[in-house]
Image (tube, rainbow, N blue to C red; front, side, top):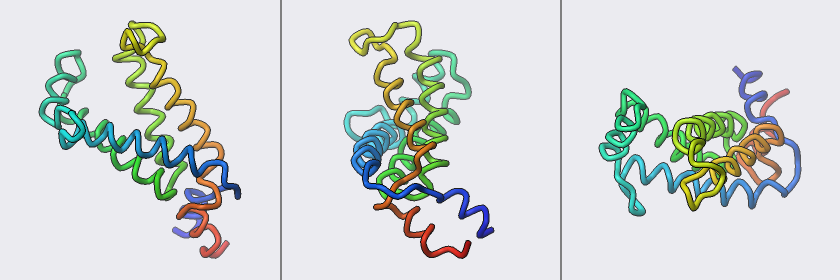
Length: 148
C-alpha cells in the first residue's frame, strides 16, 4: 500500500504549481458545485441530469453525478495538493468528454459555447499530471514522510 501511495503522491519540488493548482482548483470546484448543489447560479443535480439527458448523455443522473463529483472533489484536491496526479487525470478525462460531447461542434471560441475554456483546463490538468503538486502541497508532505 505504501508503494502505491508513494506513486500517487510523487511530485517535483517547486512553487510553480501553487497558483495554477489554486485557481484551477477553485474553478473546477465551483463548476462542480453548480452541477451538484445548484450553487453559484447552477442548476443542481436534477437540472444538470436533465440537460445531459437532453443532449444524449444517458443515464443523465449518473453522468451528472460523475461529472459534478469529478469537478467538485477534484478541484478541492487540487487546492490542497492531495493526490494531484490522479485528480488531474480524472479532470482531464472530464474535459475531453465536455469538449467532444458539448463544445466541439461550436468551434473554438467561448462566445459560441466553443471549447477554448475546456481546452485550457485540459492543458493545465495534463501539466499537473506530468508535474505533480509541487512543494506547497499535501502530496509533498506525504512524499517526505512516507518510507521509500
